Image 1 (cartoon, rainbow over the protein chains, first blue to last red):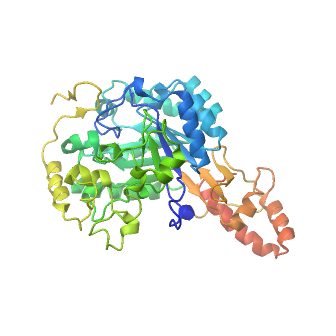
Image 2 (image 1 turned 45 degrees about the vertical axis):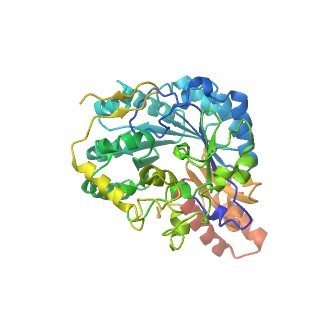
Length: 377
Length: 94
């Protein structure tokens, strides 16, 4: 999402949040090895009930949230999804569905649209069906996605295709763009894998080479020019080859909040990996108190927490210190500068990881609840 | 996304999935679209409040020229430029 000047620098405490990522469930028919859910997946029995989610949505609207992204896991596995969408729409929240498309039949989609759903984001794993099915670990998934896209189109809802890219599918990026056009998408989001949780475990299988990255950038530029007015392409570059870190979540506790299936409120979906932070539960605390008073949301908000080189950096209010989860994952200390930044004393960790891209890719370590499922090579 | 063809006779409307509303929390008008949030300035708000899928751009400019007692040609130029941009961003459609 583009963040306008609406929330400006906070003069008297934090500005109100703009968006809520409602992770309704971690259950999912796919097993993508770069899933953004935590490695310790929450089970169905731990999920919030309908009434609690409805209260959370009301509280979100009350404190100024404008957009709600219904996500998961696969949000369609929740039978109360339409009830939640209706509730959100009733409060004037802009309701977006982030889905694998599995289970999105025409009847379900009509129900969701009538409930007030405004937009659908459909994931695509690859342009090649066999490769897409391999990444998702689900035979026939690509065909199901195609049908889902047709239904979204038929329902008159705007469609965004979400394509996560990595070393094993970048060779077919052009075909992915063509697929988005074929699927009738208005918008295509091409995002390089971000290396946390499952993706970090699979980094050696996913991290692209610098050459692949350069080719992808050129290809996206050309496609944007060619498809102007037909398809908007958003491109999220991988920070392992950047000079400066990404402004993760546009700053901790600045615009976004995330609620997990069991009701933990997080400043970003990976924040649970950080030790020493107690994330408040929406069951015990109002969203207003969580946003304005909780220690966890204040911990890395603004610039006061920063060590050098961030503290004295003229980009401290552009990058916001990069990503806390990446700093922790790579250095063991969430309060250090993001090693993706070339000015970080730990930047060598990122540079060394690039070597993985030059070696043969190991098999995937698939997302799963139970014992790890490793792809036979 | 310049070069959207648009003239005074065109009738524009907001697509069903684009919301133009007042945000009480921030005390400002906003436009919500898929993965996008726009904050129109005061002039844009005056124009957008008249975009209803019935009035033509000519009608809108007549209304504004009367309301603000300003030269019609000037208003027309500003309004067309603004509406072209919003059509290019798919916030409005014909």
